[in-house]
Image (tube, rainbow, N blue to C red; front, side):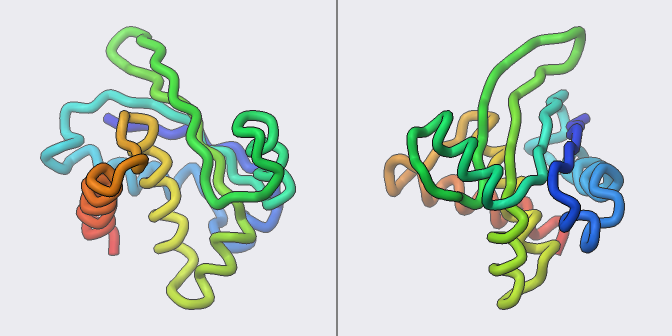
Length: 145
């Protein structure tokens, strides 16, 4: 089973996702039943923040003094049958802005999935890796949208 701990540091998130923990719990329940993720016992945390918070995190950890959509901080801590795989931070304003073209829940799902894939070892440094990660993201999104 895959579990997420959701921390909200910006009130705007709750205007759209009333109960973010419940929302992600339902998504992860579906994901945990898919062939690739069926046997994964992962746990991670998601910080729902804003551009200002993302800029601080991006500057502190990546030395980039600008905001970004999603940040992932992989770590592996084994505890009983669960592997804690790390933390994800997501910016409200960027998701809200992108949702003008699509919808908020789709954009949010794209971001936490992207962050989660980084936590479990995917990256996009090379074009081949980018394409592999994008295919996996799209495959996962099909289960929700």
